[in-house]
Length: 76
Image (cartoon, rainbow, N blue to C red; front, side, top):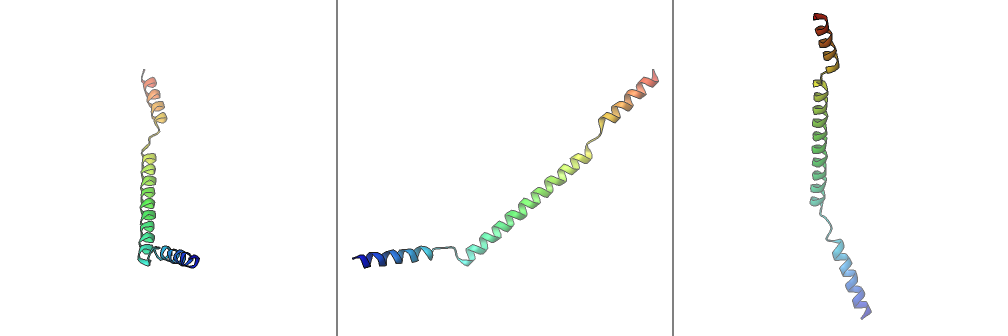
């Protein structure tokens, strides 16, 4: 009886091991990961470009205000 249980246990272990991912599934998982990394890189690059554009569009208002104040004071 012990041998039958041991044999069933070993057969169960082999059946669990054989249920692992196939080569196609592994390749699909690697492709999915590569696509995710590429999408994240593209999103990061777009965000960096948007931040750079926003920084470039920022105008130094302190210099403009000082000049406007100096012009108004000189006209009076």
